Image (cartoon, rainbow, N blue to C red; front, side):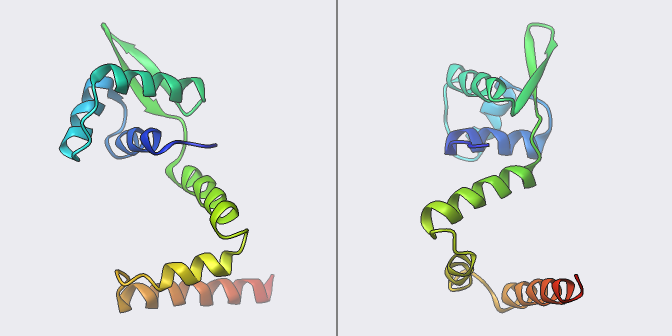
Length: 126
């Protein structure tokens, strides 16, 4: 599943807010500093529907759109594309880039170390 940045913006609203009308998505995006015309929001929702990422229920004259794709599934797909395109398939290079970010705190790094240790232990017994 490949989603554009704009499609991800709209999907994030559906993941966070649940089923929403195009007007509700537009209003939520505006609070995030993303100002899109109503027709643009509706067009992107229709594209997402054609891709099988969302569907809608009719609610009077409006349509209430809901995500058919789990956030984690979309994240895994985006991560795999990033891994292949930017890091030549090297998870080590991606993780090295990630852990060198100045925004990561010591606490963040300790949690990441714990996750890696758990994976090493699990794979040792697998």
